Image (cartoon, rainbow, N blue to C red; front, side, top):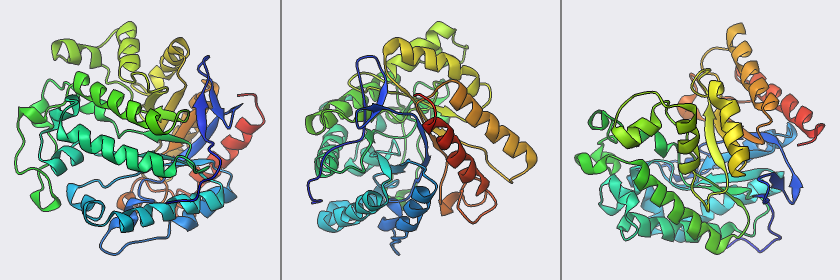
Length: 365
């Protein structure tokens, strides 16, 4: 157990403003996806500290990361030796504390991992009495109660982009992967098709469990921007494009209270950035600050890539988005197209984040 220290982190007020330690805040961080999961491999890596040190040197304020295993097999240490599991988790949190980096842990990144782990189909995310939600509550309770006193924790996130899998008209073609060697189910059926109704139940149950142990830090869904047809998918199982009002309804409903933020992405210039002003408007209307949980530009560092990246940052700044995070910092699994490190040819993106945060610090949030 980490020693008790004064709680801090991100919170919201009744007006829907984002606050850091009680003061208005805007900032741009990174996704440090495997800062923790790299410690769970056959050859555990504990080099996350060098990454935190680099972020601190550039005054990049926070990191979102996967706070649980991706594949069911990789939950093995948690199931067999929780002392060792949480010792590795402690190391990440302590390192972030030492370097003054905020953390937003995403507890259930991959939507099929927990159902597979407990032997249920994915639609059990929508059943409050399921083994899936029982595991979710247990792990959430253990993580949140263990780290709720840490100044490194800025907020809590459920998982990654569950909404993109919901109510797909062609769901049978996009069911979760079947890799029994990694602990998945041996086959998939219609019971693995997720609905908006099901994952909203999971989100509410998660947020309620978080609030039992942490009364103030922000709670994040981890959702992507709603699909352009999300309302019609949920109501008609069709790809018909939603109206602006339907987009607003889905964005709000997919982040149900007590979740107190809205979460989107910032990749596609039309479906993401093109709807960013509307997402900001919805956030103001429902009084929940907007989090662009991922944004970025893949591939080689060409002049065109730098122009696209500058446009992303400009959209985040001019729309006064309070919180955003670059995809992705120091991730070997995506070294070819996405990973940004201080020494590779995408290091300029860190420079751009540093400069953007300097601008945000000199402006009123």
